[in-house]
Length: 137
Image (cartoon, rainbow, N blue to C red):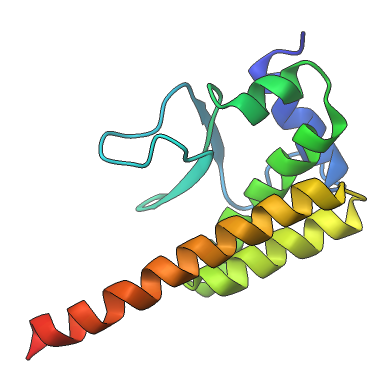
């Protein structure tokens, strides 16, 4: 079984990197209070740090050398980095993630699950926007 740090090294290697790049990456066992229990990675902007949650099923699969799970971890890094460079737009971040998964040869099942997550998040954003407009008036 790979250590959490070794999973990170493998994911970065899939991305053709020897280190995290300009955005530090930290490993945490659990998501922050108030976050969805399903969150696999997140970004704190001040200072800009990417966090990967090591207790998720996919991360544990990656620790057992599941190649698609390692691809998924790499794509989470790309997703969160997209936010650092381009802001809060989830559509763009998910499209960068899906593009990465495709380039890494991920299974259609994995790509489909990320696409489904994207549609769920975008749908939730659409439902919140009318409420936000009403609250501002």
